[in-house]
Image (cartoon, rainbow, N blue to C red; front, side):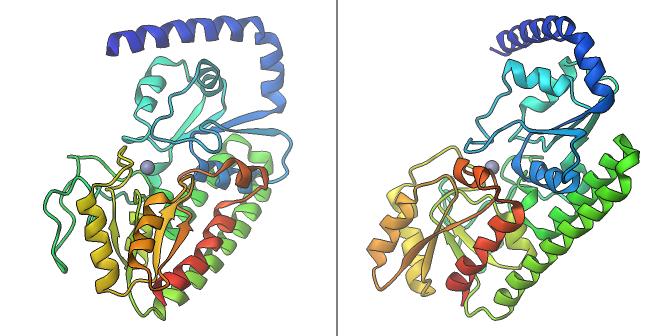
Length: 329
Ligand SMILES: [Zn+2]
């Protein structure tokens, strides 16, 4: 299977190179006036977009694209050409982007700047989450929940804490300065402005957390927000660990989550973006008593509508303020 993948990859690269040579002269000309920046995932795309601002000399691409699942994405032939022809390629890596090592090994990226954004934050290992599906024996309250999920696997959802977002922006801004010194001041100014906005959202969320009456969030869904949970020192129960590929939790898991909701008198059951929230509604209906469902933005990816409306890390995280207020206060 692996061999076939490599052969297909090799063919794609050869075709890509032929196309690149065919339009080569033109490309070289553009390369002098235009910097091509490519981001695999939404958060770093959003941060780069803020840093680059209105600089028309930089062409920024969002490889994954809106509305898609980062875990099932594989680069297309055009994507590989985009990576190869980029001046800067930013990716997250890990299990989520397991294609990245293979692709970067096989492409000729000499002279390109390649940035693994996870190198700039303190990564944590994937944790087993209270209540989660492939957790055979449900944890008792108060027990430690951080056994290794997969040996050595880091949790890739690094963008969910404001602290990490700021570290990522700082690193990306320096990288932009390296490739385009002329606009260094502008990049710094844009980055500082965006960091200020992130700090404002952080303060608002922190204020809700400081005044909470309970500290547990219930995700009737995957739970790709561990960095966020840790940063605000919250507790979480979820239907699935991290980004499990499962979509239907067992009756046992649903019963476990419902029990948690009743025990702790939790008013909101959460589901994440790009999910219709059916499991959350099932739980809320079973509980009754005014129990609601709400969508929380994990910024794993952006929906097509939000993308078209120009939503950002800041605007999407701002939506979570009302959600958290309802859930925690
Ligand atoms: Zn994920």
